[in-house]
Image (cartoon, rainbow, N blue to C red; front, side, top):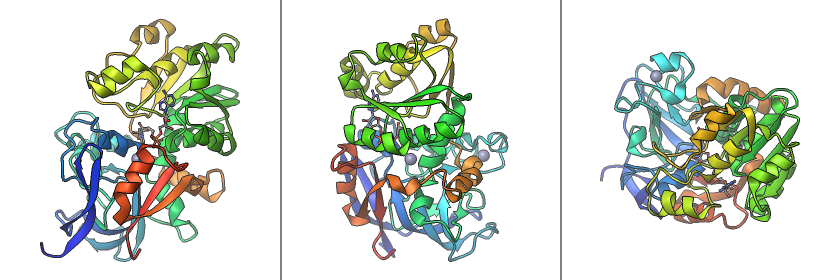
Length: 386
Ligand SMILES: NC(=O)c1ccc[n+]([C@@H]2O[C@H](COP(=O)([O-])OP(=O)(O)OC[C@H]3O[C@@H](n4cnc5c(N)ncnc54)[C@H](O)[C@@H]3O)[C@@H](O)[C@H]2O)c1
Ligand SMILES: [Zn+2]
Ligand SMILES: [Zn+2]
């Protein structure tokens, strides 16, 4: 192989390793090549790692949250120059199609033309366009004139890498919840996304923020960081009944699902959704969200599910008059605002980083993050020499 570079390589469920791959090349005038300085592992990568997402191909390099130094730019990329340190939104978006023009960068029509739902995403299954990701030394960045943003001088690169996904996703979770002043917001999931959603709920005027998970170390973290009231669902007889009791019998005004298809907490859902794969993941957190929001309330979903699911209480959605809002986050739309929130100290992203792992130990990092070992909240992979 000419000029090989190191990259994470998916070998099948629960098996990833570091391998040599060809150096990525400019393939289109709007491409750039970026030398990665940091890349995170995300809960979305875990859906791939667990074999939950259709058409996840052996040989794919994952990684949609990365920063890096611009090494090369195509002739149509006027906004970047070689040597710029950029953060790269996880959405691959053309910036020009019907959806990008509305700010729906997560639903770009051009970057994933064979699909009718999601736009392109780095390092994801081929259902998201089949692009190689950033858990590597180098990555090809398509539409480099749209997504990549030069990291401001004053910003810590550890903050920057979390602006590629976690911060805007948590923010959008709160935004889609339509939070009104004084609202009670319940967030399911105390992973990086749920933690950030809880933090951002206050920015929209929430009066009470509750976070539910079963991992005490994460609940302890978000209790301070949110701040939030926290509950371990394993210690509650029934999450939904608890949520009713603690809200005068009404339910929360807004419920956020920051868990997605790898949820735990219900044997039947685990059997059908995760073991037998008869539906697109385990929908118990969504189930709880729907049943614990008040009549007329809003359920905001950022947790990722496959295309079809059948164990969602859709009748309750109808009869309670619930509004469901959901999407992949639209990172380029939110970035300017997120940068301001970091600058003025409203959000401190890098506090979530618990593990800094050399890229060569990528397999260990996946294992630690997936099994929730060693107090792991967010691992960052760092290529040698960066
Ligand atoms: N929409 C988007 O743009 C977007 C972006 C990033 C991540 N995501 C998705 O957000 C979700 C969370 O990502 P993350 O990085 O925080 O993942 P994570 O795996 O670190 O966190 C998920 C958390 O949910 C908890 N959990 C499991 N079952 C639960 C239940 N029944 N009730 C409450 N909590 C439960 C887990 O213990 C864990 O702490 C994933 O589905 C991911 O794919 C979506
Ligand atoms: Zn992510
Ligand atoms: Zn587009």
